[in-house]
Image 1 (cartoon, rainbow, N blue to C red):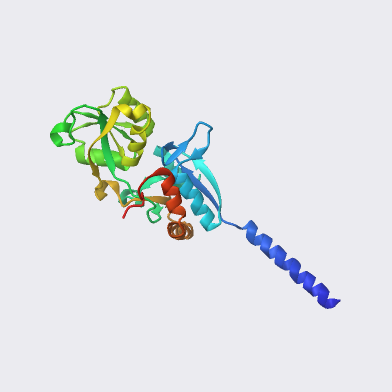
Image 2: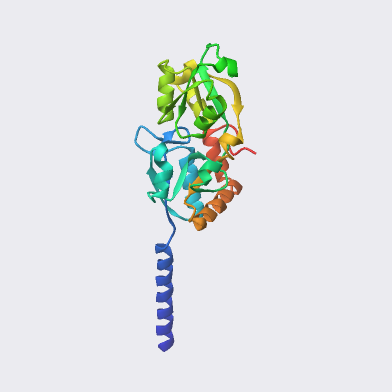
Length: 258
């Protein structure tokens, strides 16, 4: 009888310990913008989606974490992270030396160049002479804006916008001569019904001085344990085919890059 009681007690303790482990599962608040298709967006039904969001969900599953999504305006997204409104930024943020002064980054989870776009048939070339006195629309506080101001700032008039959609609308309204943005984001716009009158022009730019070392997930510098878990999860989804399946939903090439 004593042995039976001991077995029951041990079994109860094991169940309690198991429940405690489940209760202490990782909880992560994932921050994103929700206004940068196809990477992060809010659809007509009000649901958050896009490549960034699906990658984030896959990482949470790989880490066996309970994740909650929080949206934030792009201009204030790093201050919001530092104020602990969420624990990560997974919003197509380029890894740059300037941003590393404030936050820590995971390894990259994709790579993207920036490109210009113009109205179809408009004789604008991407040279110092061709860009002289042109008005260029760009999303503010992005590496595209940094590149534009750093490389062509003395030649063009820079018009910065809170979101890429606002810049796109001003292009359609004729208020800017060119757009500059992430080539994949611009490609999404050019392939849309509204963007049929716009075309790419000039080369794809990958200048690391302005554009950084790929796109990573930002965390607070003190959250080194979370950073390690995210890096391990990025490696896992790359190796087990999850990344490739998500990639194929959005692109016909490997967005991860070299």
